Image (cartoon, rainbow, N blue to C red):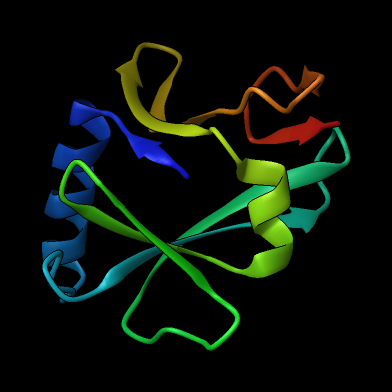
Amino acid sequence: MIKVSETAKKKVIELMSEDGFNCATDFVRVGVKSGGCSGLSYDLKFDKSQRDEDKVFEDNGVRIVIDKKSFLYLIGTTLEYSGGLNGAGFVFNNPNANRTCGCGESFSL
């Protein structure tokens, strides 16, 4: 399961509506791919379709879709949003990550 903080929820709803997505029916697709300075990087985008192998979760009013392979890396993760001076963006608080890079966009297990 992936949790969504209140600040991330507000930003997801705002960005989805700006991009023509509906938070009530569409998804936030979260995944993991090879790359980044720590070996693996997070992938986040909006999506309207669900695949057979996807796992679907809903937390704090946000529907999240994760492919089966990425799910293993993301169990227990909380999606947050930071608007601080070091840059605004979504942050993945992943308890499975042993090491993360300085920008927080990549990790290793």
